[in-house]
Every structure is written in structure tokens, then in C-alpha cells.
Length: 462
Image (cartoon, rainbow, N blue to C red; front, side):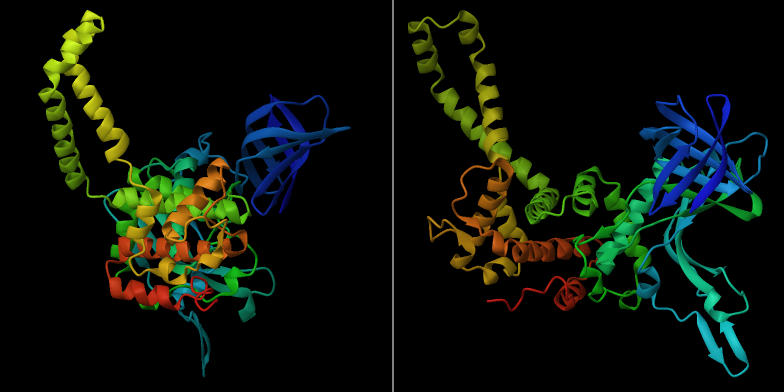
């Protein structure tokens, strides 16, 4: 998609063109002596009215300057009371592959009297007095003869409607929230290229028939592994597998906005991690470790910490007089002796914090591996520099994480040739935990995991 026309910034008009390819937004200005960062650029190209945000210079040559931008609003050449409509978005929609395949609805029906379009009912995902999220189908015509059936499509979109203005940053968060939910159910989601929105002003939809396009220069892809070929596996689930999608998404919405879980989702679903298997392994182990922390019974842990602290404090109290006597004999400062009780408490708190709160990665993986997925796959031949045959698979995985994190000793670590399959098994445990969080049906989750082609690829490897 290329827009050619005039672009206005620095109080001047500049001829140039804006290109959008795979969500990458570039603006080339055919002039000299330009530089720097441009927060907002207005463009008029044909019958389009463009607003380009956060443009930074990435390249220049003789007579041209090339900028890269974070997002772009693509609409018709219109103005309403000099309002920048990007600051008045209250509803938007977007789609991605394989949403249509996951839903599985037949939208074009061939009958004796001709072809009919069957637009499914909306599927409510989340609904409160401030925000409504649903799957909504739209009938769209593509280029060509509109009377030909192949040029008409019924496309499902994720549709957000708010009672408040939604910023671009909030739109970005909402898209991540929704696509990561479906990535967990489907196995992966494709790229989101355009976000469609209506022009709104003071809570009212303006220009009913006209939609603008918002293009955000960000990769919204969520896949279990970014390597080629994996999307050819069957989808993990389908819409027909569930009768409580509204409840499931509502739980996910709550989890996604829970600070304890935010780091897990950001880490695991990030499309920007490198392609190395070592980095993939570190991502999964970090996500599992954080998830284990979130699952801890904090009330029970606080109770145990208090008992531990009381035992330590009592020990110091019993030897208090002897300790003070020895401090005096060794000429300790008077303030040390005077504040000995406070020092006791500080030592007790430090011990509780430093040791009692420290649960090893090995123990966390063992607790998460309820079905002994890792244990049943483990062989000592998978391990590099095996120095202790009594080590468990969980110990070896913890050693491997420490090795790739700190680059220390590689004793008792998983061989690089077997790391891919252990990543897959760790993935299996993590996805099962994710599904259990919002599905609440252990038997159904087990069935989903057991039939997943991607997660079970290494099941029978010797």
C-alpha cells in the first residue's frame, strides 16, 4: 500500500510518499535539509487523509529523507471541527488468521434458488457497563466484479466498544489481550495488519458509513514457536469444543490485568524473542517459574515464615546475655549492644527473606509436572557432562537454565541436540497451566493437550 501526495510538517508542505508493507510504515520525503523526529505529520494523498505519528529519520540520500513511524491513521480526506479523530476512537475492530477457521461457521450457503449469505450471531466475549468485546461478522466486498461470489467474504472481527475514548496505546494492549487468548486456544495467531474504527466525537459515531484504518507498526503475532512450518499443525481447539467462551474470556481478562501474571504473558507471547533454541528455552523456564510463584499459597507461606522467624528470634533471645557479655569483652560499639534486640529482628527478617522464600527452579518444575511428562521422557543419555547419576530431570533443567543464563559450568546440563524436545515438553506443561487457569475443566484440558500435534511431537522419540 503506497500513498503519494503532499505531507505537512514544520509549517511546510513536502511532496513524498508513505508506504505500508507488513505493518512497517515508511515515509519518504523528496526534499533536502530535513532531520530529526516528527511527532505528527498530516498527509493528503488522493482522496485519503493520513495522520502519521512518531516518525524518526532512518535513512537519507541525495534529495530524499526516509522516516519510520509507529502508527498511521488512514481515512478519507475530511475534517470535522478541526478534530484529530485518533484522539476520539471509542470502537475498533481487527481480525487475524486463523480466527475464521477456529470458529468454523458456514457463512455462504448454496441453495436451489441461488446463493445466500448467512451471517452468524455476535459472540459476546466480555461485557460490562464500560466495555463490550465480541466476535462480530462483517460482509465485505473485495476488488473485482462484485457480482461474483468469490469477491464477497463474510469476515469475523474482534470488536471492541468502550464508553470512553481509547488511546492508541490502549488499543495495542487490547489487541494483545485478545490475540494471546486465542493463541492459547488455537496454538498460534497470525499478524494483525489493520485496525478499523469509526470516527467518534463526544461519544457519538460520526460519518456512520465511513471507517478509518489504524496501522500500528508492531508485530502482534503470537505463536508457540516462530519457526516456519508449525502453523500447518491442526488447531489446538475449535469454537465447538466450548460452551462457556464468555466465562473463559472474562477470566482471562482478569488475569491479563493482574500484575502477577502480566510479566508471564509478556515474556511467553513476545514475538521479538530471538530464534535460537537457547533463548526459547530460557523464555519457557522463566514463564514457568513466574507461574509457579503466582500459584503459591501466600497465606500458608506467611504462616510458615512467621513460625520460622519466631524460632530464630527465640534462639537469639536465649543467648542474649552471653552475646552481650562477649560483645563487651571485645569492645564492640555501645550502640551495637544498646540495639541488640533490633539487630536480632533484622537478622531474623533477612534469613526469612533470603532462604525461606527461595524455592529452587528444580522444585518448581517438579511441582508443575503433575503428570510426570518430563520425568517419563528423561534419559541420562540426554545429559552433557553427567557427574551425578542421581540427579533428576528437574535438576538438570535447572542446571541448563543456569548455564545459559550465567555461562558457568555446563556439568549436568541437557545436550543441545535434545533441547528442542525438552522445550516442547515444557511448553506442554505451560499451556496446560494456561488453559486450566480459565477453562476450569481438568478433564477437558487434558483431552486438549493430549491431542495437540505440536505439543506431542516428541512423545515417541527414543
